[in-house]
Image 1: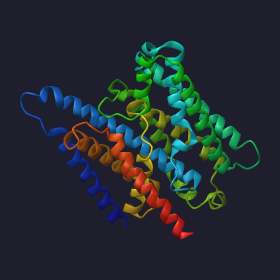
Image 2: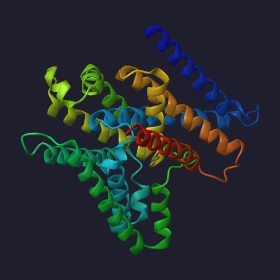
Image 3: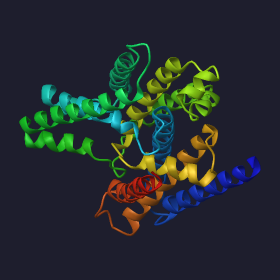
Image 4: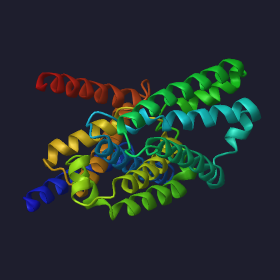
Length: 319
């Protein structure tokens, strides 16, 4: 069975390489290769970071919440990121936001999001038993609050500055913040490496909280660590490409169905590769078939939203 899954993983990686090769090479010639090829390589590298961050964070979050149709966005972390960007423009102007494309300001944003995740964990484990449903509900309410505050600020700023904020509100792979690729790779890679030692614990947690605790899993500590990692990865992915609502749930559920496994080693590889394939295929379709008339996130969210609706209908039939 392991050899079978390894072959499937190799096939998925091969598909990603073929799509990446098509994205890199189509339209190149000896006159424009010097300009386009390095930029496309940089974009593929940034998409790989986004894929790792979104795919793995969604896999962990779904394991923690014991729900396969939730995404980390329901915790309000991506709404908090957009609130920070809006607040910078509201209080300091768009020039300050444009100057924030550096590692220091990105790390400050990550620190704020980790503090928010810590506060959620403190609320969750305030009593004798942590209630994951309370965590999800609190995150959902806070996410709506952050969006309302962002909307209030956006209505009061200059229209020209609102255009800058609007660029942060929607995912755009034509205008990736490539200057942050290195630091986001370090952050996402470090978070993933820190999660690596918890793979087997997460495998046990996928059986359910009670079963995991009976197997000796320290549930509060595991949830706290992984929520910190989720916060870091969401910050990295959103800083690079903007929010992509349905990509993570599409990738993780596709990985589960493709590998037929609950083990997080396979989920990590499958969700990352599936995310990368979706990003590359979406961007290739936008550039070559749609002539940049439709953003890539619209195509990805259309497919991901349809798949989420399919999952909801299937869950409804199973009840």
